[in-house]
Every structure is written in C-alpha cells, then in structure tokens.
Amino acid sequence: MQTVPTQEVQIAEPYVQSPGGAKVSFLQRLCSALFQPVDISFLVFFRIVFGGITLWEVYRYFTHGWIARYFVDTELTFHYYGFSWVKPWPGRGMYVHFAVLGVAAACVMVGFLYRFAAPVFFLAFTYFFLLDQTRYLNHFYLICLISFLMCFLPAERAFSIDALLRPKIRSDVVPRWTLWLLRAQIGIPFFYGGIAKLNRDWLLGGEPMRSWLRYHSYLYRLFDHACAGIHHIAYHYSGSCHPHIGAGSAVAYQYRPA
Image (cartoon, rainbow, N blue to C red; front, side, top):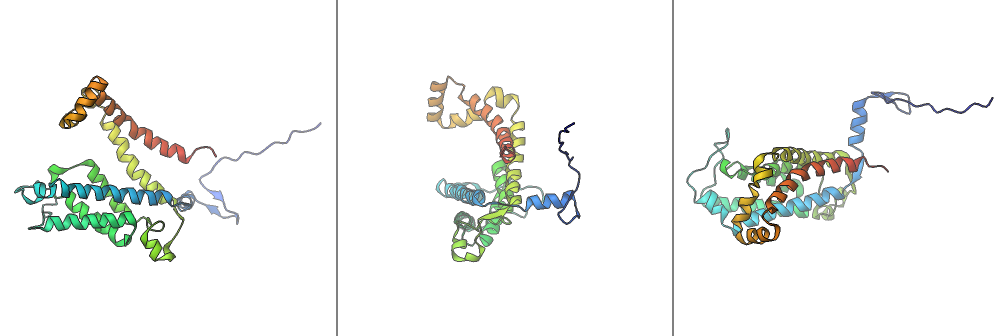
C-alpha cells in the first residue's frame, strides 16, 4: 500500500534552535527583530516634516506678536507643579529664545549639526512649554516627547547636510526599533485621544469645532451654508475615528501578506 507523505508541523516555543544548536530565548529573538535593518526614508521624511512644522510654528509666534503678548507684556504666569523656577527671560530674552528655537528647528529639518540641534530644540521647546500652564496644548506636549526621542534617532544619516559633509555617517538603513519607537509615540496618544473624544459635547454638540470655526467667520458662513450646519459634527466624527484607523493601519501594514 502506498503511503501518503506527511509534513510535520512545529508549534512555536518560547525559544528556537540556532543553526549551531544553541537555544535562543524570546528576548534574544526580540532584540534581533528590533535591530533588523529597515529603509531610512521614513525617518528622513519625519525629520524634514517635524522640523518644518515646528519652524512654521516659531514663525507664527513672531508674526502674530504672541511672544510679547504671552511672555513679555504679561505680569502673571501660572507655573506647572515643580517648575516654578521656569520663568520668561527678562528684556529681549524671549525673542532670543524663540530665535534659537527657530534656528534649531531649521537645523533639524535640513540635518545640519543634527546631534547638537536636536537636544537644543528639545530643551528650548520644553522650556517654552513649561512657562505657562494656561498655554497648555496637548500637541505641544507631544512635540516635547517627540523632540526628546529625536535626540537619539539617527535621522541625519541620509538626505542631510551632515551626511553630505561627513560621508562616513551615511546609511540607507536604520534599526527597526527607530520605526516602532515613532509609531508608538504617535499612535498611543492619538489612540487615547480618539477615546477621549467619545463624549456628548464632541459627538453631538460639535464643540469645540463649532466655536473655532465661528472665530473664523468667513469659514463658518461658508461651511454653514454649504453643509447645512453639520460640518462641525463631521469634523468631530472624523477626529474621533482617524486616530484608531491610523494606528491600526500602521500595525496592519507591518504584517500585511507578502
């Protein structure tokens, strides 16, 4: 009687056998996976966009007169607990501070003196963030966290002035952990931000988008006539859904079928 060949199926275990026969632990496999090389283009793109956005924000503080309004002409600021020592610089100091912040953002964007510019940007932006609790924005807090991570990411190794001046640092790949570190830092707060938006004011009242659009009266009238007053509701539902869709898509893309 002819027998049908069978194929043995092995069940995954906490360890595997290396070619030499030694056992490889789960922690060793995890470290190996985190240090696998991936294309550096995502990190270069993020560096340029991050530097460009923060440089634009510094430009807005200069052009809108916000530096004088919030930190020079004001007589009272509300400190964060434990950071009462963080105060606006006297005289023209705050203008110098924002100038340094803008130069650091530009250097991060183009990858010039990146290893020096990234920590300078992190310290300068965090100092600005801690000046007044009433100026809190969750996006600014996220910038503080991301700029801290940028100090350790090798984002200057391609398409940068540093890579042009120092060919030895050039690289087309980076460790996989750099990709997942950014994904986690952006995906986690956006995911929970989407959950925080699941409330009556956001989903039914259309706030705060209704008030923000009313501040820009021409936009409010345009959308109010065109969308029969439901445009702010649409904004809010999309704002509640896109963090979960984006975070899920990032993970799904990583494990897509080959």
